[in-house]
Image 1 (cartoon, helix red, strand yellow):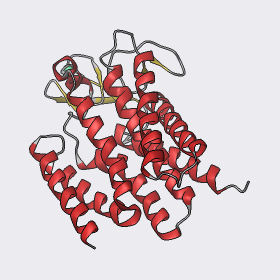
Image 2: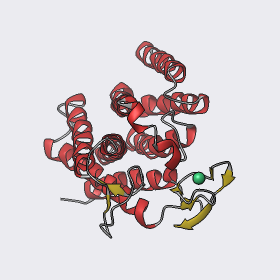
Image 3: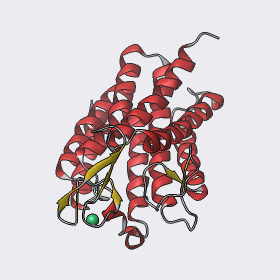
Length: 264
Ligand SMILES: [Zn+2]
């Protein structure tokens, strides 16, 4: 009981701090506290520490060379201050896998949790580092070059960063739960996280909603631009970046669950 209280008290402090440091909006911080509490109760402090590793390194990556990323404000619907929808998209599927692990006690749910967190981390690292790279981003399917910051656009540097982000989560999980996880299982979860990141880019290219500014003509994810409402030019309505994230993080976890549930 004392440990639970201590960990959840620390989580509360970190949630308030994340709001004060403008890493999260008030809604984002409140949801982080609620979901983090759920993760701690279901999977213990190790589970909470793993997803906090994602949150802390991703927030740090967002701030790294922030002034060089200022142009993104024109393309993206979001700022580097994450709101509750982003917290839900990246943390919701991991929370559900943790609850599965806590109630069923089957290790497959733990691997699913690790793969989902690895996917979220890979995607954020890839976006944050890729946008700083000198290379021109290209779409995965059509290989068409796109402006930096475009959802679905991938650079070599960003992809390598994503691989590193997934590997960090796999390795950390292996060490945190030692000797519960097999090295092969942790590596597989990291690889599925990396695959989730690639899926995120594919969804970003094929189905994500893209808008165009009626004033300046720029393609953007924003609902308004130059003081006017934008019009949708591609993708499925309401299929925003948050939905794409939710789907790819879920897919990575579900794949791990499937692989680990299969007999043999
Ligand atoms: Zn405009």
